[in-house]
Image (tube, rainbow, N blue to C red; front, side, top):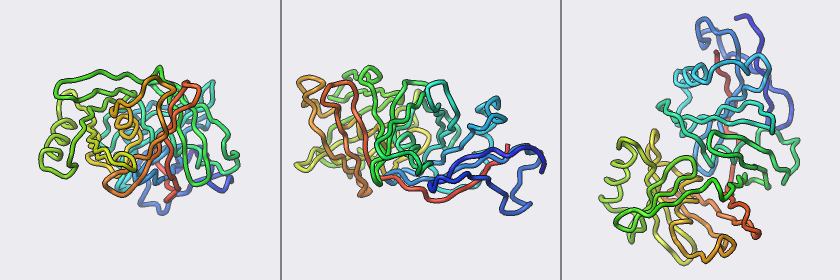
Length: 283
């Protein structure tokens, strides 16, 4: 295979120049090798494709989507294409079935882990189709800060709430997360036209217990925007600044924490992240 290679960065901070594992793994007619990382973001498996090199900037998103759908990487919940922008980074998202998403909280939280040379706590500005956020690393946790103006809530019938953070969640408070009706409704909403994410919440003294079915994926071990949607649906606030921090527990055992800004400018999602493996795509 000829042509320039895309370049990226490892968690060690060194430059990553990916090479094919074997000639048989190459995509016929490919011109570029594009580095990628598979990350575990609180049980949500994210693949980030690093397309920041100059020769990759002008390729269409569909080129990368097609490459990922034929990659053979198992157990992926979300793909994230990372490119450069005037503010810092730009992130584009799509589900394993190829359908697009405007935002993904867990994918955004994972981005600071791609370069260990970035100091803990240093904010990285990331543009998405929905809004501009800031992300940073704090030990083994990744954090994304959503501006309040990018969050829209609308009441629905039967006590449900539509929370749109760029990807829409229909949220329902329930007394039991493990009934057939919860399962049925989750599948129904994620397969409807238009499709929605379905988030079910049970209030506990220690925090919130949550299950989320994501459109284009199914039930996931955690969901960043789902955790935030569940938090907002509890409806305990008096004002933006009256929100307390809260832990969100998923049925999988994973935990995310919601951290409101004391000044009322943003609301953050925090949780563990780790690089699982490194890969490359041929485009």
